[in-house]
Image (cartoon, helix red, strand yellow):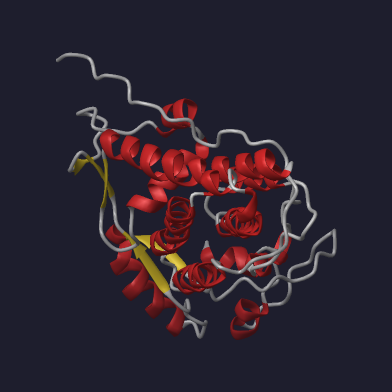
Length: 295
């Protein structure tokens, strides 16, 4: 199926080595370049077939091999193999219904590295949701947008680049990790900026600066750095939490990126002086897990 689908779409990488004519199509669709796969993603239980037998077959047929094979591990729950017979399962539909799709996406991507097995625990899900999504990202955006509305009527002040090196570092690290197919590492790099911006709030204490008219310029700098970090975080989250990214940009009054123009928007300074943000709204309200029924 890997190569017959590509051949059916007229891929010359398949047709030419095999001496096959281009398929006739009533809609005269243009040929697609589908093979070889840039990254062939498989589970670890079938690595022998895809890393030994399949390449031998391709080589014997004179066809190009996949450029890279990326093998992932398995999910466990509470340290044990998933099993319908024992009831040791995770119902993704139920989790998404109760907690939201992006919360589910975040835990799956943040908890499972590419190589080793991952371990789902309800307690771990709750911990990451509350600590990293609600208290981390959600609280940062809420404070930044709320303070800009409260102290500057929602108007972005003059640009300041105090946190620009931290943002640049996060973008570079996330980019490098993504190029290595390390989704977990890219999320960690993104949350480095979340943590740095939250620490920045504690260090600068803009709520105290707002009480001193002599600190107006300093408050402007702090507010700009906070909302600009939130904007860059929204861009970094496009591949992982698309709905959350959209909601962040909506609160910042920024149009959502489209197509291949996403990543360049992560450059510092995208928010212009005089731009007006919208009202704050909670991204991830804090929640607790429902108590487990007694055995």
